[in-house]
Image (cartoon, rainbow, N blue to C red; front, side, top):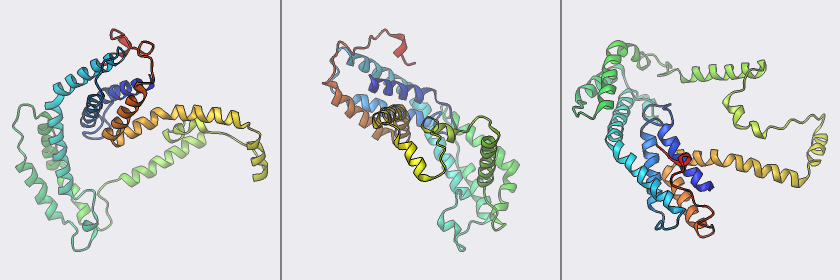
Length: 277
């Protein structure tokens, strides 16, 4: 049941996860994650058992969602390529060759590259909503703020963004929360279930306290910690490489398929708790 739960959770995340970066989690990455899920289900052996009929039904639902959203995904892919072209025109982030004295981008080269890119990009299709909106915002913002964006190519040492400054403010804010007793930040929450507090005046005294814990009790809680970490590790692998993660899931399902009782583990198709819209 754990493998099926992982698959359902991966589908729900791909469909419902909110966007945090341009053209990533909210749209294109979610679609690519669904593609990997569909391929993993396609690679499974012939689904004949009563329990496997649920996966067969789930595969048809995933394929239907992919077919329905294929034009939108293609539009997002083209819009993402346009976004990458804008980044190349701005030389952002700077590469090693851009940092060299004889290859540094100048104000004039960037001022020529972006208008030329805008002029050459003319999406006309009825289903190219993302491309048209991105191009429209690029035109508007370049007309309003284009001159202000070019100072970093003239003034040595002036960065192209304020990410380092924002990072410093974030660290100061997190430090202030820790010393004030306010709700902890995400970094602390990631390791909250593994935090242990010891009070000792020396390292031998600390070792003595640790050795008082029975090995069986430590192994029990260590196993619980490993089980609690499995969902997070699965989604981490899924986000890094969906094809590889779902291929491993498919192999694990094939390995355990012959070890289960199909009548005991069967999932009724009319169970609303397992339906994914």
